[in-house]
Image 1 (cartoon, chains in turn purple, orange):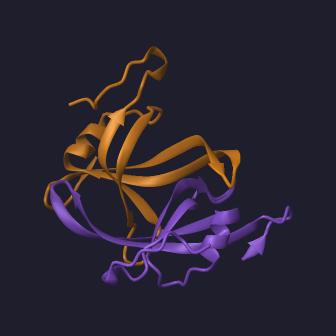
Image 2 (spheres, chains in turn yellow, purple):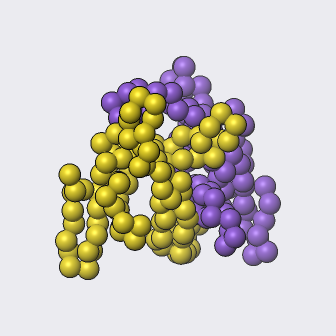
Length: 94
Length: 94
């Protein structure tokens, strides 16, 4: 975790996604990775997560910088789906 | 418009996004660009669009290739929002 000059906590990570989707009537496997960032309370929640935890992250896409238009996911809501096989879901540890 | 070896129409484009979002309690301007692709009927619909048309595109993110994990938006639904100031919305021209 790092901090902005104003002392706001910031956590950066890469979110991986794997699923099956239907495109043009054909089912296919889908994978992708997206750089993501969380600020403030979201950063504190994300900061306790392990790299292999399954999460449901929602937010908005914004360009990485003025020069790089590549999308970064700004996480505004996160739900930990760890231990999915025993049905245990955490609303994000405080 | 190009075609796959199997003759499926494919249209590639860059989707630009501009909006205001709230992050960590602060409102901010957001911009980003995302490479996008449409296949089959979606390609035919997207193929008639002009670059400056406003659209509402939904779909899924998938890695560009096995080597490049950068996300590409695969459009599975598109709604043309052109002429928004006179309230005219097109459900996609056939």
